[in-house]
Amino acid sequence: MKRDDSLKLLSEVRDLQIVDCEGRNCGICDDVELEGEPGARLTVTALLVGPGAYTRRLPRWVSRLITPMVGRRVVRVPWNSIEKISGRIYLSIKGEVAGLRTIEDRLETIFKRIPLS
Amino acid sequence: MGGLIEITLGIMTAVGGFVDISELVFAAQAGSRFGFALIWVFAFSTIGIACYGEMSGRISAIAKQPVFNLMRQRLGLRWGLPTLIVSSIVNTITCSAEIGGTALVLQLLTGWPYGLLAILSTLLLVAIIWLLPFKWIERSFGLLGLAMLCFAVATVQIHPDWHGVAAGFVPQIPHGLPAKDLVVFAYFAVAIVSAVMFPYETYFYSSGGIEENWKPKDLKINRLTTTVGFGLGSMLAITILINAAVLFRPLHIDPQMPGTAALEVAIPFGTTGLLLALAGMLFAISGAAVETGLSTAYSIAQFFGWEWGRYKRPHEAPRFTIAWLVTFGVALAIVLTGIAPLELVEWSIVFSVVVLPLTYLPLMLIGNDRKYMGQHVNGRLANSIGWSFYVVLVVAAIAALPLYFVTGGGQV
Image: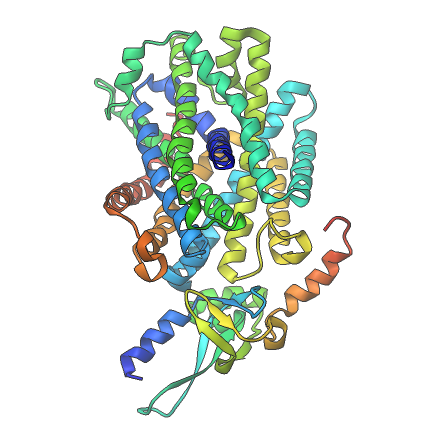
């Protein structure tokens, strides 16, 4: 892969909707994890999802302001869990397996106790 | 036959759901202060909302992308997050204005205390959203809002100067106005652009397209709803302006309270007219409260990639459900502080204009992206209108706040 292609991939993957193998929304790709030596080829190894990943992309004062509210949680989704990228990132695994639906699942259990929900 | 019924219902829903408290207040005030001179701004803005509405519906049908997903992708986090924050604040303020307006109309009908009616109407709206699927919510409020057609019947009944009305469709600035009134005229022009092109309308419409699982075959109904439906809805708002110009202007009545507009139908048709106008206003305004409350939740859920939609049961999209419940809670709290609905309308109008350019830029970019849209990319007409309006919106966004402060919200 050429250097400019890598940069294009980075900009095209970041901020895309992640959808699991059951078609459920599992968050947004907030950042990517790269591996490589300075001057050598960089390889994308994982998607990073969660406030800890997006707050560091914000101006420092904004990050300091919102981190106490949203926390620093980051979920690392291995690159090989991706089935395809086309407008969205489609995973080949369930969101729970990738660790992406923990809050949603916890809330779902609570909501199920409410009548007519 | 089924398709024809679907198209008719879609258009009728768009007509009944077009007018909200801001259009009601600003149309009546514009007519009362400047006669027919601001009709063209309504007509002009309607072309803009029809163009962007059509684009957002087309993107929903083809790319299956709602507005805030696109915003995150195209504007990135640095521009997307401030847009989300400002639009959520604006939507919540607008929602509180709509709840306040609903309570005012109910107060006129029942005489019960305003605060109690605000609480009861919020609880009822929350129950409706909790229990009904999207299509039922959209259709029932839109169709019941058609009672607003009594304003158009009143226009025919009061025999306005039709030549003057027709002349109002020609872009103009009234001659001989003192500088102070010219600034107020400019404020009203910007406010009407904002009221007609409220960002929540696009958020709601495009999310609705995904809720209803639109496909390429639905592009026809999308085009008809946004052109014919929005066009007729705008005509309804224009009749409120015409009635105010004929009935209020000669008597120097400044219709600041939303309920005053109901007199436009009460004068020609008596008690029956008054009740019909209040019923129409009740459904139109409470329908807008539902739209603004849900739009806030749509925006937040789409921006962070959560499960969302009223086609899911509340427990299947729990964070989305919490988002709209919190929005209604905050909106009600704002109403209960005692701030007048008119003041809330003015704030929502001014700040809406500021986020409009950021709302519509991603639509224009994706609408032109063949990778997402294939053969359904924007045509020349959509691009010409879209980019021309974009320039207008940027100018309006820059002018909105200074005009608001200079005119004291049009009260000078």
